[in-house]
Length: 311
Image (cartoon, rainbow, N blue to C red; front, side, top):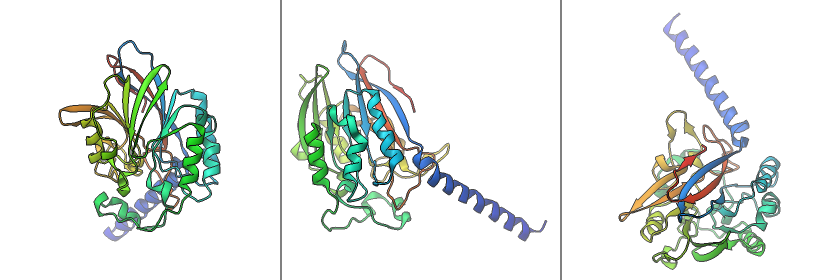
């Protein structure tokens, strides 16, 4: 076989394989929702476990009925607390179907922060820009065009607590939980100085909540003594390389922490960091590869218990 024929055959096989991967990523994995289960030892000794459902990055379009049904069925897990780390919307018509998706989860104690796609609709852009460092990406300065205030009123009216640049205390299963949260660091709406300060040691647990896990915010939480920080935004890299992992995080977090449970250290302190790979994508890039859409059930247990992960 001539070199030219061999090259043509190799190109054809590579093209076919690439097309098959794209088809799988767009038709299968992007809708292949999964529930992760993780155990995190952060509670005081002798405390009963606390089940926290971490939801993030639905990027919901009104027609995504499979996603709506799947999220709605998560109420059967009977979590004690919901933590929503933003990017709920993808359309100006998404709030009613979003509330239908959350359904009975809205009757449970919950906290939330916003991401950029709670304020702005996604727009088509060169997918290659996603591979740029986060500080090289540009964000349009126009005003918000999504009904984030309608969503905020619905969440708050149901009893969930708004943590956008705010602090709050909840009593859950007899435990005092202190929270601090920021608005989205990816679009520079975070104001950590408004929630800064050492945690109260009399709380059973203090939790930091943000959308995008930028180092400046993680350092703030950990430096102030928060033992647990929850975030989303990364989509787990969205397109991962099998046996290698994610190529990007879409922020300044390193790729080893792009999703799941890890440890973040700063100023001699450490915290458990959980980053959700989220449940959606931009409607203009509806693909996932080697990175299934996910929600996570975190079981918080006393500090002398081992960490476990159901990834």
